[in-house]
Image 1 (cartoon, rainbow, N blue to C red):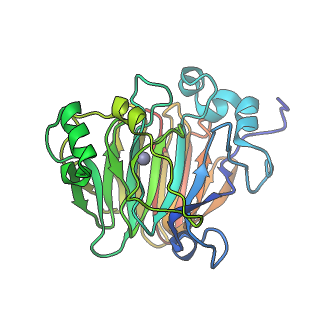
Image 2 (tube, rainbow, N blue to C red):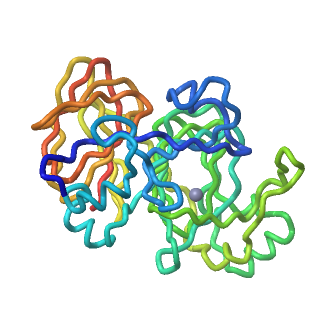
Image 3 (cartoon, rainbow, N blue to C red):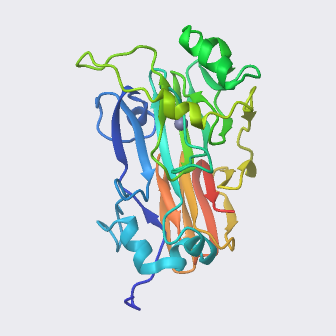
Length: 323
Ligand SMILES: [Zn+2]
């Protein structure tokens, strides 16, 4: 470690992924990518997956990968408990998602399986009449599920929620779900890229091909006790409000009005991640300051324990850390 180098808050190049269900809102509402880009479904804001790691976009570490910085700064970046508990791996994945069409109905591996994934969504914008599926609508056995599925009645046994801006959804691994069309959201999840697709609405891609389904794998991951809605409506209020607290990540929402200062205390022995959803401002810490802009994601190293949030306009942001 070069002693002259000091870790500071980091911003990243978004990793933009084209999807058959993607749209234009990542550009039009969050300023991602080029105007007119077709069907961009996901912006990976912060990823430590070795197959697709985030690259630092500005400052003294511009061009370096998150993985290199973790190797260099270890627990100063991640926190002592996180660094040892996750063996130097970055434990979470942060995305913005624009669903112009429904995503596939899917499930992720459970906590006792390989690559488990619990996730949460916070709705940034919803077209009127938007809905999504999350959980089953009634108690079922694996055999019940199989017969509904084979009879083409899967949608009849899923819980469907109406969705509005500022709704939050917690999706423990094993809970069946899909994001519905018309939704722009922030997704925070365990670092895993394993999705078992159960049903894809019989859609075909530009080449007339259907996407692969993984019904057998999905069946072993489905949790049939995940029944009914768990939607929460949490509009931002001045100061911070708790959004989702779970064994895997804790997330709060912050709001500050024009020309205000708020202290964000870390001291949680974890990194913090700030996703700016609306407005803009800056953060200030002992050794410097950094601007925050709508649509940007910022990683605050664990070693920076005190931050001040200073607003220009009103600002709304999500703060996430490892409990
Ligand atoms: Zn999912």
